[in-house]
Length: 68
Image (cartoon, rainbow, N blue to C red; front, side):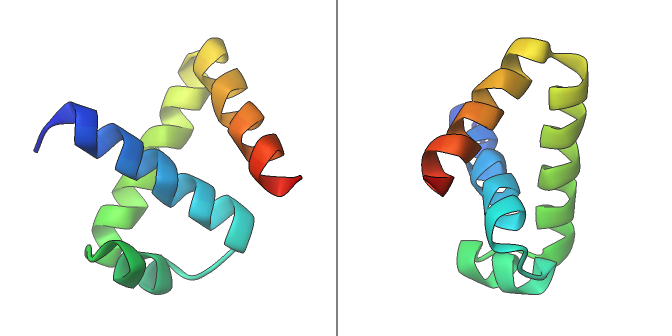
């Protein structure tokens, strides 16, 4: 499990949850992961956003760009 792969995947899972508002099971099927893995990834990204303002700004910018 390489950080350069895991972190972007967790961000993608977080974005999918925020934008699509799909269930964890639906997202886990799309990423070929267990729903608990998706839950952990989303929680990890949310925690990182809470702790790091610049990271939150990056994620918010991604959300805005995707939503336009």
